[in-house]
Image (spheres, rainbow, N blue to C red):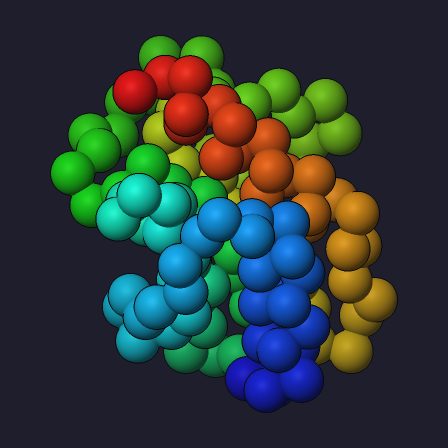
Length: 115
């Protein structure tokens, strides 16, 4: 796991979500709004990439209705459930900061209207 990639991702997320509090969840950086974790980094054991997990907090129940929380027309997110999405960033590859910042902001906005 590259500390440089993690730093780059957390900087983008922090700028996109200035109201968020940074902490740690699952031994990785996490961002919470109003005490609810919504974006958490994940370092797979085999390395080579960092996953950014968009979720609804620890108490959210996963569903698989096919009605995802955000539109994903470019299919850049992986959806393990309707309530959780994953964006992967590979070490050494350029990071699409606009995509990540926009997804963070859209995720936070969607959660604030779906409480």
